[in-house]
Length: 61
Image (tube, rainbow, N blue to C red):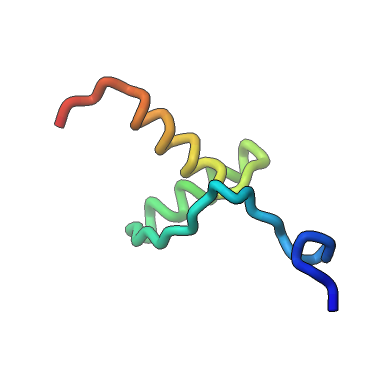
């Protein structure tokens, strides 16, 4: 049996990453997919960038 860290078909996740489920309207999901494809990134990568920018901004709700 091959461990996940040595199996080339199993993606590895850094130990500090946490998986979450986010519900999005279909049009927003499609826009994220298009933006990610245009930037040759994954949707998860685009969402991480957006979340990081939001948290680091000085937005007041």
